[in-house]
Length: 129
Image 1 (cartoon, one colour):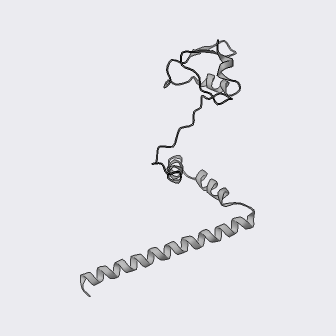
Image 2 (tube, rainbow, N blue to C red):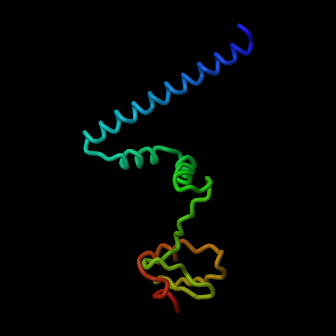
Image 3 (cartoon, rainbow, N blue to C red):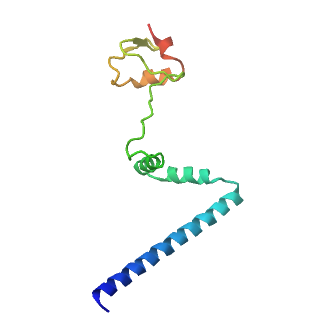
C-alpha cells in the first residue's frame, strides 16, 4: 500500500468511528429520553439537572451558546433591583430603618449590599429622603 492509500484508509476508518460514536450517543439519548418519560420527568428536567452539575463557567458558556451569544456575554443579573424591579437613582440619598444613609454617586458605582437587600423587600422610592 502506498502512503496515499494508507492515508485514505485511515481517514475512512476515522470517519466510520465518528459515525459509530454519533450513533451510540443518539441511541443513549433516546434510551434516556424513554427512561425520563417512564419516570414522569421531562427533557427540560434533565437539561436543568445537567447544567446544575456543571461548573459555573461551563454552564455559562453552554447557556451562551444556546442563546447564540459568545461565551462570557450573558447579561449579569442585577442584585440591586428593588421589589418592583427598579434600580437606585444616581444622586439620591437612601435610608435604612437602622438610620444608615447612602448616596448613589454614579450609574456604574456599586450598591451597598445592606441597601440592596432591604430594597428587595420594599422600593427605592420608599427608602428616599
